Image (tube, helix red, strand yellow):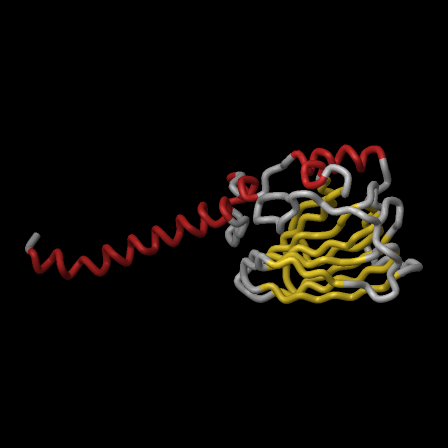
Length: 220
């Protein structure tokens, strides 16, 4: 093979290598690192489980739900409950995350419905004032366009959802809730934003030691 032949084939070699690298990223790297699995190969190979490992928080939440009626999901939006009524929306750019928490006293039920304009990865979980993040309980992790039902807190603390947009399009999440919430907090882009609720009762005293915004594939 002459030097001229080698130079003429070089662009094709580079193109093939780029295609291979792209295929590896889509088939294996993205599902394992972000949970984004457009081909479904990552799920079949178990790679998406690497992005969303089952942690102690999930085990504690499952044990709680086996013994108490904490979360009751429904096919239709639940009837509003007495107390505070709240509506909140947030637009997520591709692979952006946000965490939204209500402060709720133990035993104060809320009705909720959240929906996305596209599929979102979610983690519904709660952090108690007594025990902090080390006693976090997770009640549901998955991918969906909506979730609705009633929630009865097993302890006083902050309760809510982590959402991540794992698509290449912007997705807006809308949350509607009513009941015994006393305050709300948004954790996004390394910022913690207090969001008071009009007409709410005084919040129970307490803080969640060690809480920071959840990262993808992790729990806080």
